[in-house]
Each structure stands twice: as C-alpha cells, then as structure tokens.
Length: 448
Figure 1: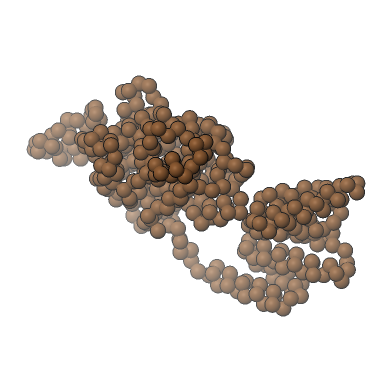
Figure 2 (figure 1 turned 180 degrees about the horizontal axis):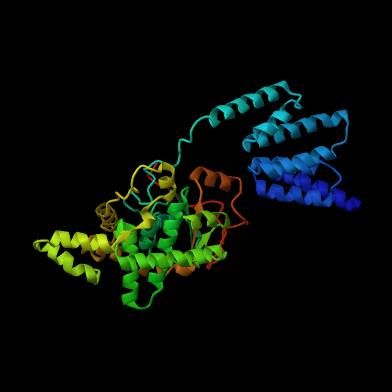
C-alpha cells in the first residue's frame, strides 16, 4: 500500500460521505467499499460502510463491518466515542433482526444511559409483540387477484406530446396491479402516432397476483404474435376464461398447465420467460411456489337455453364432470393462512368483470368492436384488440414485475436501492432495461 493509495482511499471515503448525506446509499456503499480496499489499515471507511448498510436495512452486513471496525480502533480516549457509536449500531441491528439474546449481552457495554434505556424499552416492546398472534396484516380476504375497477389508460395524450421529450421513454408505476386491466387498457388507448419507448413497472405484495399476471402476459404474448388467426383466437379465448371465470373448460385447463410448466422451467433455469418482461431474481422463488363455444358444451348448453326437460341437469353434469377450477384465481397464501375454513373463495363475478371492461371500451373508438356477444366473447374481443395494438409496440415495451409493497418500492427508488440500478432509464428491448429512477405516472389500485 502506497501513500497514493492512502490519499485516494481518503478521497473516496469523503466522496462516499457526500453520497451518504444526499441519500444515494448504493453509491455510498460502493465508495466506502473501494476506500476499504485501497486502505485496510484504518477503521473509518469500515465504520462508514457499516452505517450505510444499516440505513439500507442490510443489518447482518452492518454488524460484520461494525465488528471489524471495533477491532481496528486503537485503544485511546479519543476513540471511545466511535466505539460507542458502533456498539449502539450493532445493538440496533440485532434488534431489527429480533435477536434479543445477543442484544441483552451488548446493552450493558453501552455507556450512554439514554441509549441503554431506549434499547431496553424496545426490547420489552418486541417481547410483548411476540406474544401476540399473527394478525395477517396483508392477508385480508379483500386482496383478490381480480380487479374491481373500470380500467383506464394511464398515458394521457398531453403527457406524451407536451411534457415528454421526443426520445424520452414514458414510464408508469402500477401499484397494486391486480389483474393488470389498467395496463391492458393503456396499451389499447395508446395513440397510433406515438412511437416512443415504454417502461411499465407492476407491483403487488402478493406473489399469487404477480404469478397470475405472468401467466396472462405469457399467453397474451403468444396469442398476439401468433400468425395463424384461428390459433390466435383460441389463445385469446383461453386468456378470457382465465381472466374472467372461476371454472374453466378442459382445453383452457390443459393450456394453463402447459403455460405454468413452461414458466417454471424458464424461471428455475434463471431465464426470463418473456422477452419484454423482467422478473427480479429475488422474486423467482416465491413465483415458483405459487367454436366459438367449446364444441362439447354446445349440445347441453343448447338444451338448457331452449328449456328442454332435463337440460339444466345435463348442463350441470357436463360442467361438473369436465370443467376444472381456475387456480389462477386462488390466493394460495391467503388459503394457507386461514386453513380449515372451508373451500377456496371463488366468488368473483364474471359478469362484473365483463361490465367493467365494456364500460372502459364504451368511451373509446373501439366500442362497437368489443361490446358484442357473450361474456367470454366480449373478453376475447377485448384481448384480441389489445393484442393487435401490442404487435405494433412490443419491441419498444419493457414490463418489470416486482413482488413489493408500494411504500417499500417508493422508498427504494428514493434511496436508489432498486436491484442493480444503473444511471439513466434507457430501455433495451429483450429484458435489458433498468428501472427508471422517476416515473411519469404512478397509478394506485383502488383496493386499500
């Protein structure tokens, strides 16, 4: 280690301090790490690194760096203050990790009476909370995988033309994505004369919701890009069943199983299943956990509609024997939590879903195209229209799916803590995009 290394280490540490004070914590961590590598003889950059890790919630890493800094501090009266700061940070890190036994061993080594009292108060509160049953804060029944609102486009023409530079990508953050109806509606209503790149981030704290939308996106992509019109129509019909109804016909069930298998194979192999959609590495494991009329249905359905004697029983028997549960509508986490309270909640109303989508289309130039036929047929037309619009934009579209709460996501963006963030927000089709640091539109679900 040379004198130049020592000087450069101090300059890098000071740069890290400036980044730390402005909230650029990821960059600060990188700077402190470089300073530690340049000069491993002083404790200051190691202590700074511990502080930065603590601020981003990496408490184990903070503890490791703090302990290392303690070992490096010389035994002098001037260093006592630094030691106490490190001990307090170690104690608070163990507190967040809920390692109460270790905290008890550290508390008495802290000289500050107020800090000791504060830590002991927090320890008592955690003890009290550990005696309370899990209240399932995020598992209330109202958190369905199905949306409850009339879909609306989130990209106003004024925003696209007046407020954005010609080469600037338009970005939307969908918080509480539900069944992605607002994203599909945005796709449909995007002006024909707009050729700018698009970046959509879809958030939901439930893996089952993100998994369901990944299935939708995969089927939607396959249907939209299918050149055979009859095959494309069938895929859109399957998507309509999965999107709308709780009980689906055999051909839809078989395609669903094939799609799930394909997605799992890709995810478990570390591959992105869709060229224009990104799944974060940290979200792969939770996701893996997680004509026409059907020809054979025509005869019993006709008998039922014609009020033929026994027609209702014939139709019911056929559906009970052949149709299967639309498992994408089941919130597995919720069912596991509430265990033993009966069958899964399958009360979603397909008529309401069709009405919501039709209401959205009634306000657009495509209203005559969509609002015809049965419930499923109306949904098929809706997705076929979205697919036709998608074909002209898929090469400039990037969708990022994240299992994350809105508040956590916004705080991550504010502190520049998104996974592998890089400066700028250029979109590279085919999965190479990085999340933008700011969004032009933030849409929040109407579900509390």
